[in-house]
Image 1 (cartoon, rainbow, N blue to C red):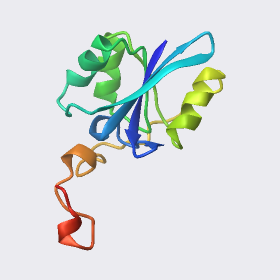
Image 2: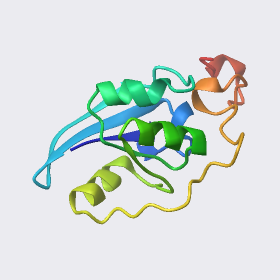
Image 3: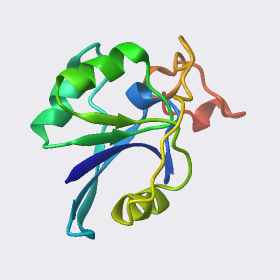
Length: 132
């Protein structure tokens, strides 16, 4: 099975579509085979389900995701697990041990705007620390 986890640093990102990275893990027979990170290619309606499907992803794990995105993943045959937070390594461990329990999406309509890939304002106190 191949999973994709919305990733921000070493933690699960609260906003799926605007996360900076995806952690892709291949798990077979309750063993981690590979773990890689890839950059989020961009948040465009309908694009990420196809992009991740082409990478062989069967399950997407995130803090939150809008209902439209969840529907598009379902149409692509990819299961979504929302309401997840914490360290990515810990989440992968829970997938391996079959103890990961999803919950309600942490996203509320419009909550992801200005976060991650779409962020346009610097949150650093020093302007020259920004790379936006």
